[in-house]
Image 1 (cartoon, rainbow, N blue to C red):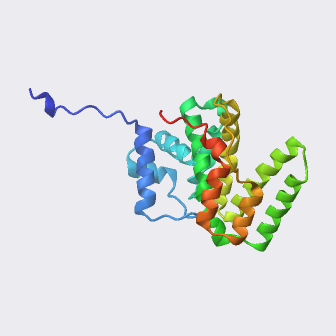
Image 2: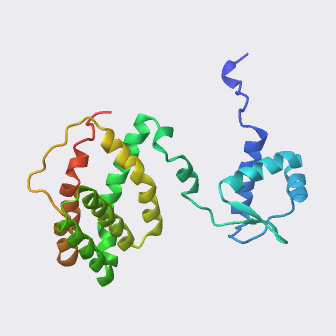
Length: 231
């Protein structure tokens, strides 16, 4: 007997297969958000499975936000909430140290990466909001207020980018970012010639995206200094 010809028994469950087939069906039929699905009995018969197995597969897709039940319409395809599932688990105490560190780094990458969008979509209103925040920060010695101004400044940058998915994502990442940074034992290095919010605002007003990205890197250097070189 040639053991090389023996194929392993598949480990995928029946419900896994139902979920996969349903996804394939949506694609093959080019279903769009709002389109109804066939009735459960018809789907179960066509797939050759019990209605129990079908319902479990449908339940998974409902959890992912791909389908939902509507009165008088049955089950329809929906526009999925692509961040919904991630949002449920982005709690620092749920994550291991490696994931926490990677999320921290992802937040920094996002911060550097929005410069092009900022210069495409900056507006008088957005710049005025940043000016208001910077003036408030410059005119106080209250540490808590300065911290709030810092958070407001960066949140406003994301709003100016005009990308609601990025805006929501950064809000989800922020608590983990703070958790990792505040818990690091790496000494806080002093950055020579630090870039302040005022500097970033002036570049946003009169400079270009490359200058802004370089300045933002210096502005965030204190965070980059906490990242380990080797993993």
